[in-house]
Length: 496
Image 1 (cartoon, rainbow, N blue to C red):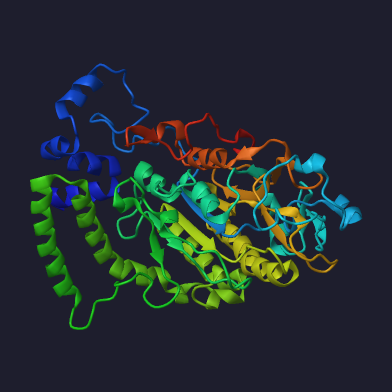
Image 2 (tube, one colour):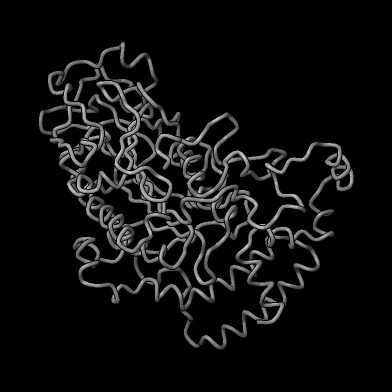
């Protein structure tokens, strides 16, 4: 391999080196409003190695200590699954069926406009039976029998909370650290801070599988996996559930691989001239992305071809694994990506917004994800991958104990509830077989060990060897972080 090829590979694999190499003298002066003045002022300030990139930052400077996890998979239940019907057992509610939620519990907390006008807030106990599983005796709903089989592999967190009360701000908040659009997503931060582990697949891949519950689901916007103010090369690459896994991956009619290689080489020469002239890092990102796209023409079809998987493996994920675009197929693909050292895989499963008809929709949603989630954990464990792969499961907020709309013993609906909800984590850096946090008897308020979503993200970063306070990017005069500006810490009680 010649020096040019070595340099190109280093640019791709080492984000800090690539970013700094793109910062030419011309680009520095054209993008800095006061150029030398700011440089002179910065020399008077104390060393800020924990903030934005400096010329002396070493490659991979954002991995601050030895990681327990090298990669991560985030199973995101978009729409907010009901913790009361799945993971947060409240047996005392059965005696309070159709009674009003006490004001001493609600405490004047805000409601959505969908229920704020209700004359009363009748308590809707879960209609689903719960049983204890595992060494810890963790209570799990009958909707999740396979989860019951893996409680000794996971840490259930029952005390997650957020400030956002509506879907779009809430999902944007937990994915990017801010309720307003424009920030970098978790996967983009990981790509930026840790770089790629492979040459032929992106560092950050997203899947949006089909679902079986309520058909009118909340929209997903690509800002949830976008790079925001970070270089565009760090945004997630979305795999489609039908047709070409990635748009324009196949050669068009009349174009073969040799011709495409020649075209890309010529285009790279033009882009290199532009880079040398203007020094814009986005030009380097464009060169990198074209090269990645060419390599993906062979790597992605091989990745998505499940024919080589054993019958036993496919049976473990359940019958839906044979249907492209399902959650089960996506989980198996996620394991294949982890084997190929994709840094971060995020699966957004929609349809969890049960304002009504929980009896009809929630069992279908749970059936979509129960066995495949279990299979993913077991598959990773059997292959020796779980110990350095972090897996996260959860949504953007929880659901209310009181009913939205009509209430019967057999059916009910639940409104949005940001005050408490349940998630689970497993794998690299996480203590298995524990339950963390506790809510009151109504699953309305956290009464022990609260976990804010910023603390959740700090824990994810910690497992991957990152001190969240030192992972930042200079944007609009601020050192922006995924975890915000207030003091938060990783949840040490769930870390191994």
